[in-house]
Every structure is written in C-alpha cells, then in structure tokens.
Image (cartoon, rainbow, N blue to C red; front, top):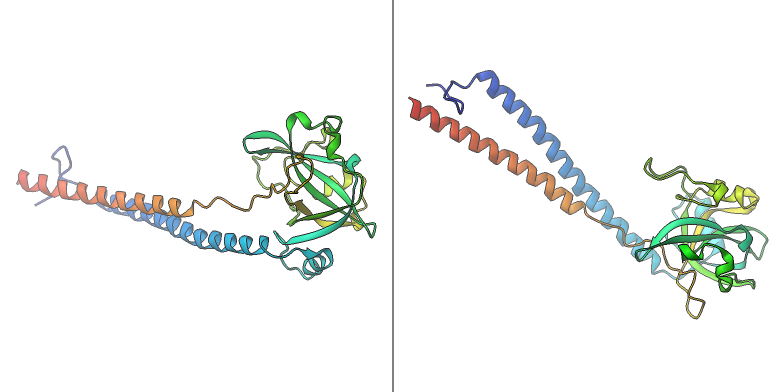
Length: 254
C-alpha cells in the first residue's frame, strides 16, 4: 500500500524525506529562537531588578563613583552627587522626545569645584526652546548641586539606523563623548570619562525637565518566546494533519 498526494498520485519517498528534513531544520531554528528569548527574558529581568536597586540607592560621592570606574566596575545607573557651575556656552543638543513632544536633551559641561569637568544631561526642552535666548531662566549661573545617575559613554554608534551626529549644527543622535568634549573645547584628561543624567528637580524652573533617564526598559522577550514556540507547535500540527490526510486518501484509494 502506498501513500498518495492530494492528486491521488503515490507520495514519493524522497518528498517525504525532504519534508521531514525541512521540518527538522525549521523546528530547530524556531526552538532555538524561542529558547534564546527565554534566556534574554531572564537576563532582562535581572537587569531591570539591578537598575531598580541602583536607582533607589542613596547618592554616592563623585569620589566613590570614580573609584568604582577605575576598578572596572559598572557605574551605570548609580546615583551620584556633584557640585560645580554649568558652562552654558558649551551646551550640546541631543535630539530626543519626551512624552510625545520633540526636542532636545541639554548636555552641559559642569565645572567641578576642583576644576575638572563632567558632562551632565540636564534634561529636556521642547524644539522651540533650542535657542538659549528663548529660555534665559535655564541658564543657571551660580554654583549648583546636581544629583543624578552615572551613565557610561558609548564606544561607538549603537546601530546603523541611528543617524550620524552633526557637531557643526550642534545636533547629536547618540552620546559621542569624544566629539562632545572636543566641540566644547574641554581637556579630555580633565573631563570625567562618563556622563551624568540629572534627576528631576523640585522648586526649579520647569525647563529643562530632569529625570529623563529611561530606567523602565521594554521587556517583550516572553511574548517573543511564545511566538516562536507557537510557530513551532503550529508547524507540527500542520505536518500531522497533512500526514493523516495522506494516509486516509491512501486507504480510500486502496
């Protein structure tokens, strides 16, 4: 007795072998992708828990953060307190959106009390307020205390889909520390090799809006894993139905 196709012709054994080989390869790929997403889920949940724990810590002194950085430890999202004076003449504009509104993050050199510098992301201003003359109240001239989160510098552009920075127009799409330092005329050896995102301020002018650090990272890995595993299950069910239908047609033909 031979199996047949939908047209009633005998099912070629080579086609059967080819079908199962393709099925096996596709299943291996789908299961691998699903398992990878499960692993990414565990990693992302650990990362989010770590971020939550760090951002809830008491702000450390700059000296403590520098010591951690010097030892090669991760300083990302660690709260830190700084003291100094902003140099608004060297403000950099990082294209961003905040609550659906387009605008810029203001990356401004903070001259520390010891004469060194750290570039601080002061927060968001709308597109219409890019020009400093439209927001004189944001140009704080006195010594300030800045409480924020330490952020790592990026070694390179994060993705090919991110536009190139345009320093000539003071427009940035990714945090290029080297170029920002160069454009601001800062001494790299006297500039701390990381950024600080300022936290939201109370009792200060509304702009720039502080506390713009993204700490609630998207976590869709479970949905992705279920999608890949679901496709694997669907493929298996389709193969079973095809085999059962072929067997039934063969029996009817006999």
